Image (cartoon, rainbow, N blue to C red; front, top):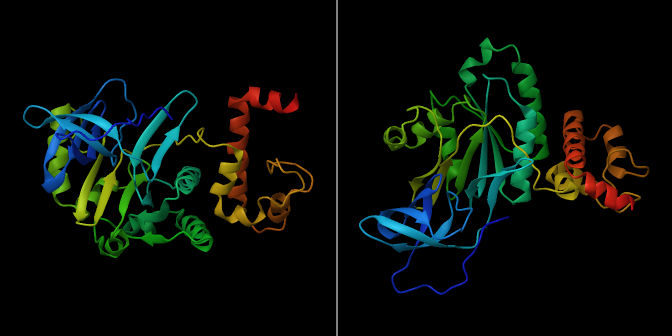
Length: 315
C-alpha cells in the first residue's frame, strides 16, 4: 500500500478527527464537538479515505490540512490490475445489499465477503425489495442461495427499505457499518430511512459537485448515535481482489478453513493437485459448487496477471 503514516509528535495546534467524507483530493474531517473542517492533504501523502482517524492542522476559517493518518483497524478496498480503489477505513461491519431486482450477483457478493474476511470485518447480507418477490421468477433460486450463506454463518436479513428498516437497526448498534453492493439495489433508500437528514445532505453535496442529485458518487459517513455510524459508498459492478495471494483467497472462503494446511503439498493451490483435502471435500459435496468455482476463477486470474511468479516457482 502507498499510504504514508507520518512519524512525528502532535503540535500544540493540531487536532485529531475522523474523515467523514472524501471527494477526490478534498476531505471533510470532523473533530470534537462536531466541528467539521474542509481539508486537503499535505505533500505527496496518498490514501486518505472515509473513516480514517487523522491529525489536521487548522488553517483560516473552516479549512485545514491533513498531516497524519493514524493507524487503522481495517481497510476495505478493491484492487484491479493497475490500480486500487480505497473505499473505507476502520469499518467494523460490512452490509452487502442485494435486491430482488436487479438480479443478485453472487460472485460480487463472494468477492466482497473475501475482502471483508481479509480485514477481519464482520459481514451481514441484506436482501432488499422483498415487496417485489412475487414479481420475480428467480425468487426461489435467491432464497436457496441465501440459505446456503446462513448455513456458513453469515447473518441474512430480508427487508423492504420502503416499508420498514426497523429489523436492521439493532444490528447497527455499536458498529461502524459500510453499505456496499451493486447500483440500483436501494442503498440510498435504505440510508435515507435510517438517517433522514442524509437525503438533504446528499442533495447539497451533489449541487456543489454538479453531479446527479440521486446518485451516490462519493463515500460519506453518517452518525446513527454516539456509538454507531454508517458509511455509504457508490454502487459497483466489479470488485477486484488483486491485493490478495492464493492463501488469503482460500482463507476468505470460511468453509475452506478446516481443510487448509491438511493437503499433501504445503503450497497446494487446491486446483488439481493430488492429495488435496479441499478438493476431496468438494467432491464429497461438502461445499457449494459455485463457491468452489469462484475460488478457482480467482486463483487462475492471479496466474494470468503474475506470470513471472509462476515462472519463478518452476525455476
